[in-house]
Image 1 (cartoon, rainbow, N blue to C red):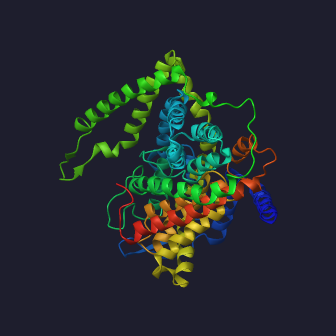
Image 2: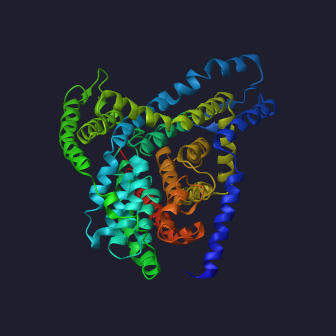
Image 3: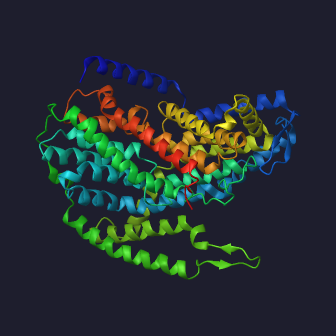
Length: 516
């Protein structure tokens, strides 16, 4: 490794870390927005402005002075229910239900066992591709990807007499840089991105539809794009490993601590038994969901002649049911669940991780409600859209798309957490970019956010697992710094950003549906 490059990467990583640590927690940021908003309504209260509606009609807005008694009463009357628990048609409740189901499957040990079983049976020639694929699809269970697959990948390469950092870098790129891609629809990421995008759009009169006017389903509006991305990124990441990472690391020395052995990542007899049971559970889940799809949740035509698709409208609950069934079959067969109370504990454990989400959404959703009610949100959108139109960017939607990707990618270096960034950026950019050019629909803007938020995860010290991955790598190369890890991961980040953005632009230019 070139010492000059190493010094530059260390300096860059330290600078990012310093800046990132000076940025307040997103909860604090939202709390600080409240007095700013009140001051703004004092200065702008009564101000009127006009925007163009989705149908070309003129819509008039007035900024409300929030210090007046009736508006203060509105804040207190709506703080708990309408502006938090019921905000956006109950988006918070949907997120919690999905996480309960994921909690049953993850805490049963299913995901970890599946990764062990598949990971230790990968042929050497296919190792980079399948590690990348496993990493990308593991995003449905974050901990298993970071805490099982990445160290397992290091052991697999060590067992072949090759530098373990190659395997760990490959798996890390899949798990983290490919975080938003998946073959499974209705994941927690889909719910958080999709349902909040609907709120951001509809709160300012933006239709939650495709460019062709087809209504969007929040949980599946990106499915074709993220499924395609899974395949494209898996091959892309494997190519980066072969082309850049292997030549850099294969000849470098590494240590293999005596306490580390492949057996610690072999699926145990109990886990293998659980996986066999989960295979049977897959049939049960398919039968249950299929029965619902053909029966009470089957398509029908209502009294007004509209085709109704209850199965797709309830896809989130059905996928949650699938994870619960699989978790129960694996958990009881493997012995991780011995009584009903263990299942409850698994759900409670998962809910313990949601505490921050509850705090963040209380302040962010109430603030978004305040922006919508007062008219400030529409005014911010109006000013931003006018500025972009003045620059003539309404004629170049591809530039708008790429510009938003780059903006989000830079912000991701300093602010960790998908949810917090989406809460900060979504309410501004979803309506603003639509009003600049109606081709910038909510699903397209949200997809651009997903691309940028994922691709730079692996090169920022602000990513929550970056220290953990660095510790894993130091087992094989003591003294490895974050700058060294950044240099290893940088090719993945750059190539993923280019390829993934190009894929999104391709979907946009050729009007390929992002989802269903």
